[in-house]
Amino acid sequence: MKKTILIIAFLCISSIGSVFAQNDNTVYFDSGGTQYTVEEIEIWKRINAEEITNKTTYSYRSRFSISSYMLNNDKALVYLILTSKSIETDKDKQSWFDLYPQMKSEQIYKLYGILIKEGYKLREIDKQYKKNKEEIKRKYNL
Image (cartoon, rainbow, N blue to C red; front, top):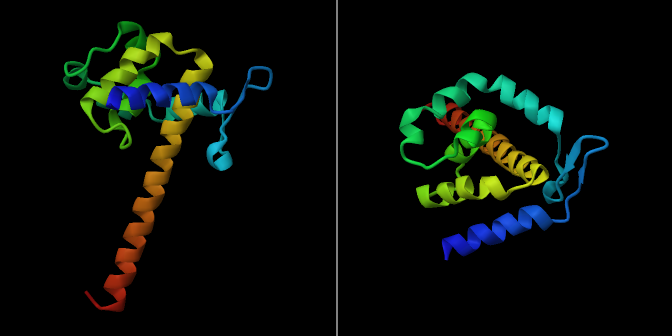
């Protein structure tokens, strides 16, 4: 059942109605209207390089079968898959690692955009939660 869901998700990423326009280097996403350029994704990779390296250490790699090509060329995507809250189980994560060699570059960038957006949204939720928690503490002198 989960493998079917992953395959459907993979097909949705490839045919979501989004457009990958190589001439202006923009990846468009229909969901929420968020746009990420290839350049923005590359900047995100550089900004997070140290954390990416730490999170993709041997301990993670020993749990998954990840191609050396992916580890050498797309370590940031490995990091995003490993840390994603929406890709919960190790089996689901492994399925994405297995799909990687068949994915086209525009599908890979779409996956980057989706997973980066997920991270941003989760951080926003955490910030709001902490803010609300502090307000409650102040209000009730806790």
